[in-house]
Amino acid sequence: MSERFFLATPPLGTSALLEGDEARHLTRVLRAKVGDTVALFDGRGHAWEARVAGIGRDRVKLDLGNALPTIPAPAVTVTLAVALPKGDRQKWMVEKLTELGVSRLVPLITTRGVAEATDSARSRLERGVVEACKQCGRDTLMEIGAATSMADLLAAAPTGTRTLLADPHGSPPEAVLAAGPTAAILVLVGPEGGFTAEEVTTLEAAGGQRVTFGRHILRIETAAVAAAARLA
Figure 1 (tube, rainbow, N blue to C red):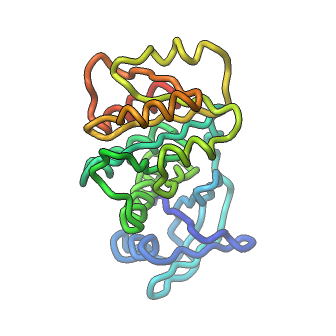
Figure 2 (tube, rainbow, N blue to C red):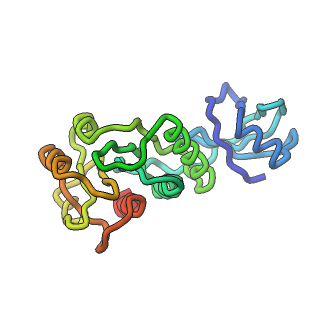
């Protein structure tokens, strides 16, 4: 059995416990039995072989085996702050950003935003990250941040962060990044109606620069994925 499962609870010694949806998928969908082997990852960069040791109602006990090789975290961390699109476009975007290695996704509160980043919406995004990691082999979860305004986001950015704003009339990202190496990049992607003049002024006053990720006007999720593909 080659399925990967997300271990939300840290292992204790050589034992691990799957609970909730992960346990139910293993036992009710895949019909695992004691002695079957699976792969586990903890979302923090660790993965193991494991053997099913016991099956309960909504939990599965596993014995850990050998550690599995993992992909190191990228040298440059990329955070995307995005005015969320509507509906299933969020799910698609989260899946692709996870696959591309983005470190963090922050729902961006903007004047013209159309989708509210509620607690339930954030939970759905987090579940989408787990599912994408299981599929693509990533062992470190992409963090989903709390909904944040541009001003608060810029104020909290670590010193040395290169801040970029996706804009069809901006400069190519390579030209902006050629100014020198950086350990952290923050990319802001606005809503369908675009950022207001005041929001752009706030960004530029904080040292941000406008960059383009395509020759045409891109949808929110397309711009986010294009930025991730170029930078992450």
